[in-house]
Image (cartoon, rainbow, N blue to C red; front, side):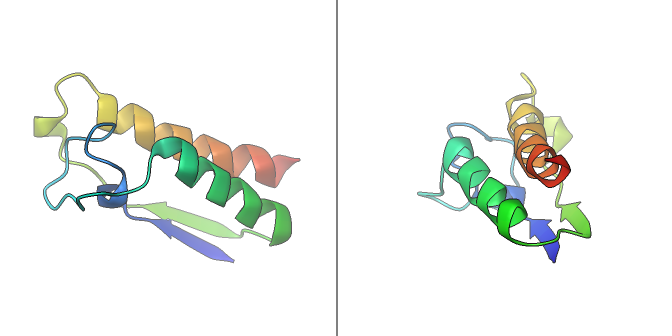
Amino acid sequence: MYVHIDTDIITSAEAPAQNYPAPGGPTTAELQDVLRRLAARHSVVAVSLSSWNPDLDKNKASEKASLRLLEALISETRS
């Protein structure tokens, strides 16, 4: 399975540095759960992550949220 994560779907409260935020998006914890389930059930062979706008990421909240998503996917894939 190829997994692509658009970071602009993460709730703005957790990932505010988006050029095109999606209001009412899921939390990082909700997305981590989805990614862990995908990786547990399918063979993930590649992953891509759309980027956030670093100029808007003053406290690196968007970067940290995105890295938590990747870690959830990768850690389950290694199991």
